[in-house]
Length: 210
Image (cartoon, rainbow, N blue to C red):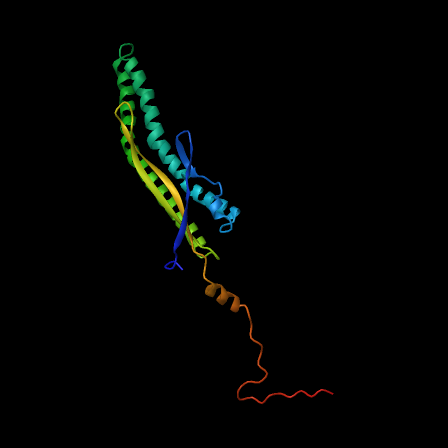
């Protein structure tokens, strides 16, 4: 089945953007899939794929510890330390600046942690799409194949900074209708042959009616 799949048409599922960010795919049912995939099945598949995109509880904890805590902590300690240089004794503002500096250094490991989490989420997303594709590849009478497509591009800000963003798409390839021979074989297998009256090597039984 996998080797004989021939795509005749392709449907693209876009990401749903909100506030310039995207964390899920659009669940609107494409009209091209009417009569091929049930709308309820399609909604369940998209929900499963969208769930794979979400961060797990442990990933959220890591982001909080290595991103939010260092940034907020560095600002909270460095700013008072700079202000108290001229108003407080040296041990006070030195301590504040030292704590703020340590927290600021933790931002750099946080960059690697965020990249690791991003790769892990991408792997879960790809695996979820592959599982849904296996479910629909063997679906009769018209199979479909689901594929995850990603496009990365770099954006530049007015301050000279840049960042890389990745857009994901789901492409659903619609295969050709299964031939009549395959359907005939399936229908033929539903018929049962009658039980033979006599077997080879046995004498047939003769039933006399009164």
